[in-house]
Picture (cartoon, rainbow, N blue to C red):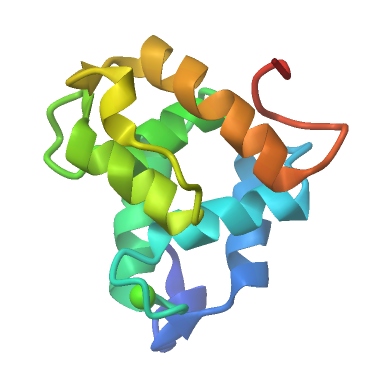
Length: 139
Ligand SMILES: [Ca+2]
């Protein structure tokens, strides 16, 4: 696996360590934005990122290695069935994870990367609550 020996013995990976990994790819990533991604990595929602969850995420990071596109990262992290689109169920996981009360059905059956970016961008901005954001323009 491409995650190096540094984490090999750890049962859980600390949010700050994930932030450091993210900063290797996204230099201007604010910590608040990393925390959003930490929540999305925590697939079983127990509030911690297990080594298995971390390794799954790191393999996604490896795939998008050369592209400094945080949306692509989130898109791939949310695309549980690897269909290269985000369906209503996957989108509902996103909203539930961030505790955003929105009906995912209002955005249609499935979203491609561009559509996903338009849908989640404003929510990510609001969630991160930072003026210097890696996410989409505010609406
Ligand atoms: Ca977990």
